[in-house]
Image (cartoon, rainbow, N blue to C red; front, side, top):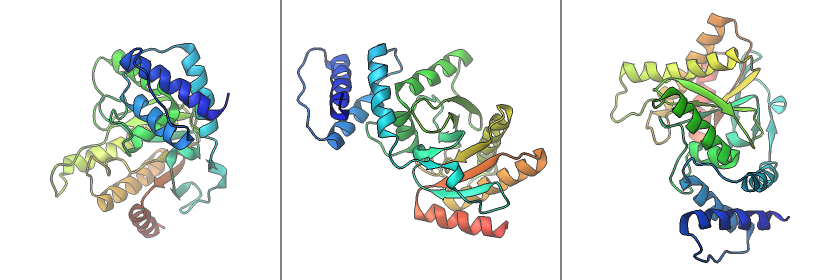
Length: 261
């Protein structure tokens, strides 16, 4: 089956879930089909789906996710032998675990084609990630607390696991000490979880700096300080990648890492 045919099958199934037998006309380019597919997947609730859908979705995503993979072994440390800075799409990084800046529901972003990291991680991991996160929330009987972390399989991503953490939302500045502590706690919880499961590497996104509004400069300092303090206190040999996407974050992390060098 061609990639376009997989996408058309998946879109038609998702359209049928939402609209029944109402016909749908689809474009013929892969890029346009991917956007339609992603929009449907983003808004779909965490309910079971057929094994056939999962199989075709997995085939599609595994082929899609093979593009531009960066392996952890290709990176060079920028501080000590185990701290790395890498600019790029975290969903293309082959590492033991990537960190997702999640919301308290842990279910991913429900806004179609939104450009947040939570959205793209769930999209490229596959529908199983939302189902796994829903199970976590159901079992604990409440939403995830700020500063805590949970780990799931990464499903179709090149990483092995996704660690989901909820950072603080900033509604006014200057940032309170409580929110600075909560952001540090989010990083700390992810590191504890990675060491608990004896992972060898973890890649952090810039937690809380997107729609949650934490100032980037302050967040980068907290991220680096927390990781270095944790590794020293626990004698952890965990390899840590600070993943940045914007040029501004890259500059901030470079400057802060140099200050610690």
